[in-house]
Length: 211
Image (cartoon, rainbow, N blue to C red; front, side, top):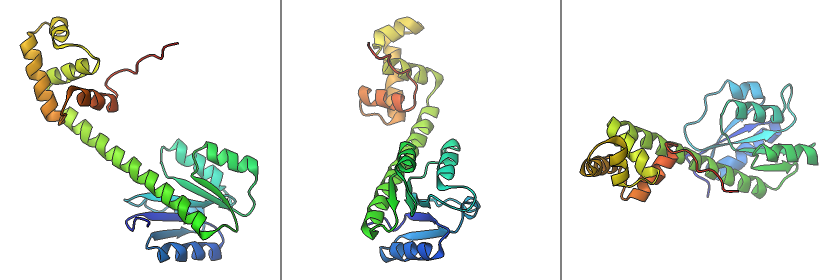
């Protein structure tokens, strides 16, 4: 079952293909927005919920591959399913290397398209949830005092309370108080969880790979 709160964007210059895909999506309860050109798509407002794009490769003016590249350069993450009646292997390899979900050659099975759409919507849903979690984490981190932030970062680096106390010149008991407050504000149930939060926020440099 596809999520009824999702939207599938379809760009194809063939009105019969657009209508056919629109009917297929409506039959499974999914909202479809249909566009005859890339220009029409770019003038539209992006949907709020999980989204994916069913994109013809060959279009008047810009190609689907051109749009894929432009969206990536603009950091606009939309899972893309390419469909084409004139596909070739180099074209499909290029599309997949850039992160396309699927590359379907017309005529394709409806179920193959629906399977690819379901995968695309699932990925976009997971991305949106991850972004929301990150926004929440940033807000919690923003609520910390400067000292609490400092100690959270040191804890995430693996430093012990007595080491942190020595480094910044305060009592170990004071470090523990600040650490406890930081954990409460961050809603971290353990020190490892606090460390994972710091990693998500990129507060701690990545460890160098051992050769």
